[in-house]
Image (spheres, rainbow, N blue to C red):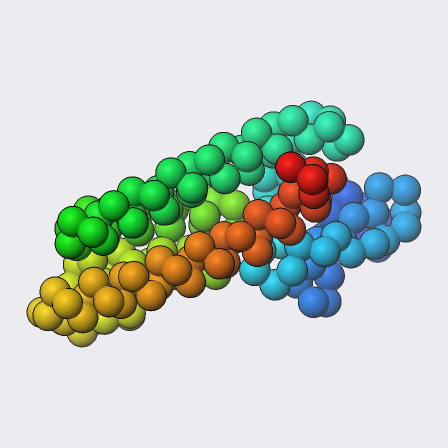
Length: 168
């Protein structure tokens, strides 16, 4: 005989709030963690579920902080490849950072990196229409890289706040 549980009887440590934020309920109380709309709560929760210790959060913290280092290095490479006018490499870097940011649920960063990938491949923002003019592709890459850097800075602040590392 199968046992059924009502949704109310199953207590989750994290769930998604009505505004898309992550809601923590360790002791039965609920409080939204202010991660903002730029972080997909369901995706980030999957990373949090891998932590052995919910206080220290060593596993998820290491993934997030490794991403910070990786993103900063990738943005430096993007800047360098803009100067070299290397659209193919810009596309590859956009693709790389898109995957890393998607893993953490950083939706705006992911979306901007996908556009960089498309522009570097001589496409429009959607990746559907061809854009054969290198100058237009480079201009689009440059603008979108600057946007992605701003979006990264915003999620970096939110995630450092989550890990209580605001002063870092």
